Image (cartoon, rainbow, N blue to C red; front, side, top):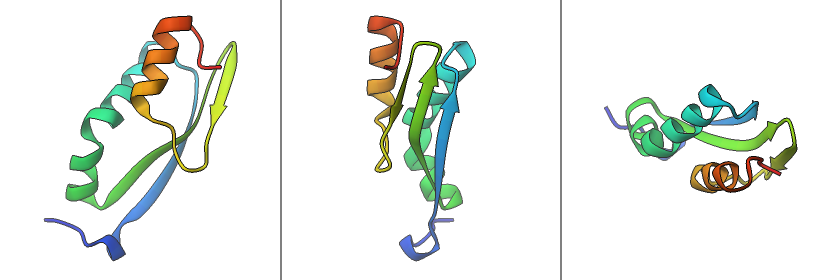
Length: 78
């Protein structure tokens, strides 16, 4: 079943903690976002993420790949 844009529900997500579970959740959203949108009519949007050393926020949404890259490169989101 495919949902029309008018039936789409936007889900804004803020993550607190980017350890193993948090980062894996970000990866899954990045990998499966389109499939979830098409199948369930949910547009998952990460708008905020925080770890013990920083925070990132964008009401338009954060790119999951950038979150993962920044965390891997510097050890922090901020």
